[in-house]
Picture (cartoon, rainbow, N blue to C red):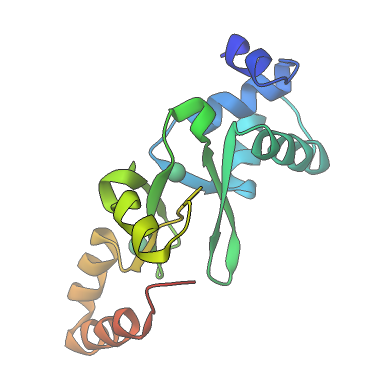
Length: 160
Ligand SMILES: [Zn+2]
Ligand SMILES: [Zn+2]
């Protein structure tokens, strides 16, 4: 991990390594608040320092930053760490953002570029919906909630 940071031109300090380990630790993109909590399990760090590290990581391709509607940005491993740009599935109910397979598996980038007459450099895929755990809770709560879920999902356009 230290070598990866150095390769990206980032000096591998203890705090930066702790942040990198948190990012590498799951299949979810996390809000800064969650990353802060997890890093603090390993060592003390203040919020400003963490945001600075996340900005640095995003600039150097170590982390990816993703918008999530009206909620906080989510961060996960960037292409430099994970070797792939990838899409996300976002739950509108609980805010969990799951990392999906490589974007190339979700979208035919070559065909997309052809149809747009564009050199496609990046594609951000975010699928909004209600996750399985939230659907189970909604199911237990009655039909009314389930119907409302359908309306929410249908109202979400494909693009941000
Ligand atoms: Zn959910
Ligand atoms: Zn991700």
